[in-house]
Length: 191
Image (cartoon, rainbow, N blue to C red):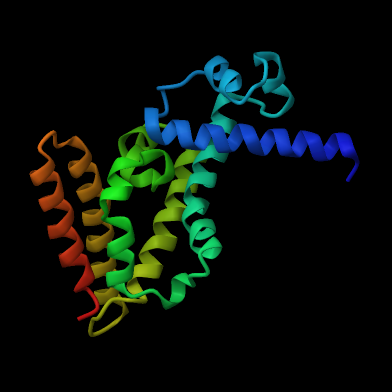
C-alpha cells in the first residue's frame, strides 16, 4: 500500500473512531458531518472522499463500536470465551460503563436510535445481537440450547436496559442499586 493510501486509511479510521465515540455520547442525530470532521481535524469537503453518505459513516461507526469490546479485552489479555457470566456482568453493568457511554456498548447507548436507522446499521446491530446472545448462551446454564439462549437473551436485555436506566437516574444511590441488582441477576445465569 502506497503512502497516500496508508494516510487515507488512517484518516478514514480516525473519522470512524471519532464518530463511533461521539454517536454513543450524543446519539445518531446528535452530531453532524461538519462537527464530526472538525473534531477529527479535517474539513467537511474531505468527508466524501471517505464515505458515500452519512448512513455509510454511521454503519461503520456502529460496527466499530461493536468491535471495541473485543479490542479492549484483547488489549488487556482477556479471552472473552474464558469469561464467566459474572465476569461479563462485572464489566458491562458497571459504574464505569454507565459514566462513559462513548467507550461503551452501542446497545446501551443507541438502542432506540438504531431501531430508527437504515437497513445497513440495523443489519450490523442484528449481527451484534446474534453474537452477544451466542456468547452469553455459552456461559448460561439450562437443560438445552433453547433454554440457554432464552436465558442469554433475557440477561443481555437486562444488562443493556440496566445500564440505560442507571444513566437516566439523577439519584446516585438508585443508579448504583440498578447496576448492582442487574449485575447480581446476570451473574447467576450460569447456575
